[in-house]
Image (cartoon, rainbow, N blue to C red; front, side, top):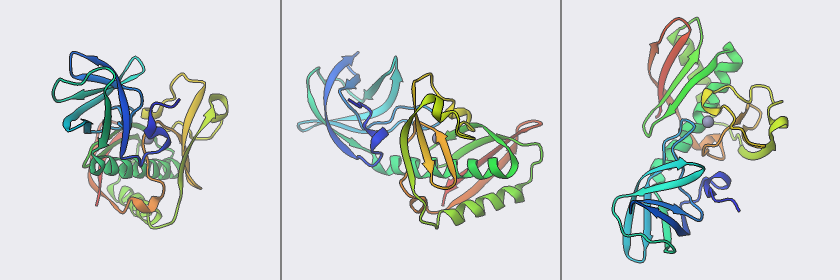
Length: 235
Ligand SMILES: [Zn+2]
């Protein structure tokens, strides 16, 4: 059974679950979860775990020894509790939109310049992006953002599926982001932006580029000879 429900359906905002362990009163594991654990450049989700009328706010979600642990704001949850989980959807949906936008920009930069993405950190209100490129020119970057924004007006589907590791690693450019270095698993999850990009990735994404809206450049920085950093955000 797939316990990480967001991997199949990133639009799931609510789900029932059962508490299977509680550590130090506040660290809770569930039989299945809609909460994304911090990792791969994507921040953790927040939201609520509700037992009858009692609300436990989820303040942090991490993955430890393969298990997703939900940190709640107060003690009280017990093994066997049946709970209702509700996502802070506004935050998650922004992260989905900016995560997919980051893949589009990475694909365009990689195709156009050969640049490799060396770091990628999504935040709720901006995306930080590091890449290796000797020639650095803000106007060129602006042009890439214009091209990305043009793509976001098109009806372009995004899909995700699993492939055997060997088959996945044959896809050109399937690993162009440091965040996405494939884990040592027999099967890899691929996020495909149809006609543009295939990337090994465990994050949550929108189903269509039109959901992104528009992005804009916030600032650019030089981080050394071949290291460029840009910040962009959803408009
Ligand atoms: Zn990604």
